[in-house]
Image (cartoon, chains in turn brown, orange):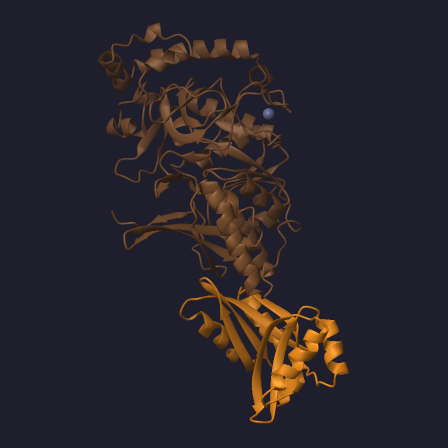
Length: 432
Length: 142
Ligand SMILES: [Zn+2]
């Protein structure tokens, strides 16, 4: 059941040694880039003095802002001729970030994705419907190459167009989906609206959830709506894309491929290292990348390391599902809140739908937090009192999760905007 | 037996209009309607002439709707008319969860619609005490 046993189940000591060797190689490559050359110089760092994973603490981290400021060529470590592809993450502000890939980079990345997919049970007999967008976004092409490497039959359908998705699901009996979790939940209701039972009339066994941090409760909902196994995945375009970390069959944390990435968990404010099990920001250093090596890249994703060995036999450490992002946290009356905390509570309550919105507003100089949820028709029994109790229960459970009491608003199904892409959950209407 | 449909609606302009419009477009008539509202939402109870059809119309529009049996009973439209019913039910310890009524003949007859915790038992008791219970068709005949 292991794609590359020599690497994936390598003894920890050997893995550390391999990391150090690759780290030194990466540092040498970094000296080919204008950005790192001047960064080493300005900080009086001799890259050859950095040998171990501990030594990297002396290097200042690299941020998305650094990538933007040094567009287009500041981080390129090869000649332009060696670049075979670029990927880019959509910049909400101005210049996007661009990552260059050599053909060796694409090859190594495809292999990481292949080993991740294989780990969840994807085989050459599978029909792989890839519902992520192709193009500059890494989710589509990244998974495509990995699934092809395994030998699955890939349907490169891309994102959106639900009618066409359902047609392919039915006619090719797709067994594996790669999909955004909020869209998976929307898709199952649209399949039902077509008079099909997504549990019985389709042939889906494995659902790979990506591109959107989600809670355990959401995973369970996705699994229930399709009677399939859903696996969490982690990746970001600056670190190739999908295939950085992935869940194994145990569905308990994601193995982060430590032969390809050196990970650190640090306190976001001070960059001090966190203890194992302590929540902090994930920093990643590429160990294999030729064209765009990155050192201590700030992912802004919050997670922690799960130290205990995994029963699957892989030795690469697991990270917990992403608990939030340093930049999607909002502050309400002085309390730090992550949308995923709210999602966790809502997805555990069967009477409310999968779509929800968090609305922050200000009225008379007082901040308000409103959570809109849809009532599920099947679980409505004509009873006002019952709904009032549900509202009270939700308020109480949310209060114990986020420490403030939000207003809970029930809306009719279909009244919240549904999206085929990443869902916009938080609307902040507070004027400063 | 009589049936009522209960509908979930947001307390927002146009929501009730939508429900009555959907029903009237399909020629479902409403004999009685009552709205109770809570924090930001309400439940509309409708006594239509064709409960199953009304229910199907609203459900196919994805509106949370519930179809249930209720007791519709004739009472005299005089002071104390309502008391006769509550007196009997109270004697048997049956709790009235919800009630609404409409007059069919002023000063003479009214119909009281009841949701009681133990519906079958309440029906038996009311019949036994001489009350006339109405079916969906009978309600509309008045
Ligand atoms: Zn494992």
